[in-house]
Image 1 (tube, rainbow, N blue to C red):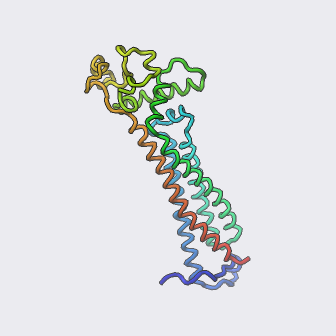
Image 2 (tube, rainbow, N blue to C red):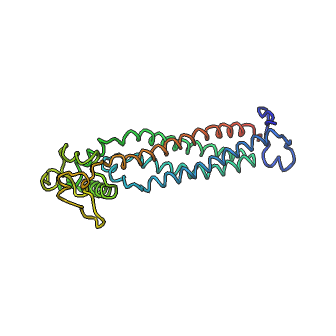
Image 3 (cartoon, rainbow, N blue to C red):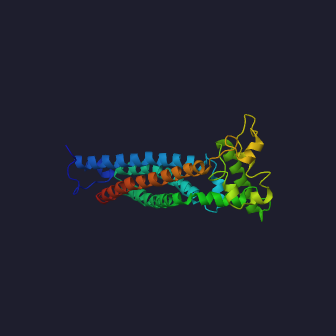
Length: 280
């Protein structure tokens, strides 16, 4: 059997319940149970969102220095907002459950006001993460690689910080993942770069980190690597290894956040209706 109609019910506050003035209405109990279940889901989703965003900002793939060099790390800002919003959703879901069980108007009003504030923050986080997915294009990483990699002439301390971060990140990526440049070794030959200005093609046509390494971390055959012989130089680019994790995490932060917002909307709508039916 379904729940009885709840459109006309009135809920007395806790004090009235204690005095026995509240009727045993199965419709009220059913509606309360639905709202409590909705808040339980919100709380669990809030914890999951917090965990996901913490994993994101921990930068397991080590991409942050590359985004910092572009002066656009909004995706990390969205993740930090997601951490705040997720934890608040968990705490407020508990407050909402208590307010619903006690039929307390004041408690529910506090719950609704705070939940709408957190809701707005999560909307901002999800929108920012969704719009940043199109930011991770090959040209983004290519431009900063050509401009910052091993640049010996920083113009200020901020520029020096970016140069060191980009150089360190690229060296680590190329060594650990067996890749070279954004699209491949040809990037260092096709485009003008700071690296080529200070290294002749005969000496280093591309960074030594592009060479296939032995177990000691040394090029298997440095001369063959400089000549671009297959098997001695890594011919695949690093773009997919860089942009792939960032795009997946941005997608997760955005669309998981949107799904939480959709569920929360209906729970808040039901909570507002329930609040209006509680008598003073």
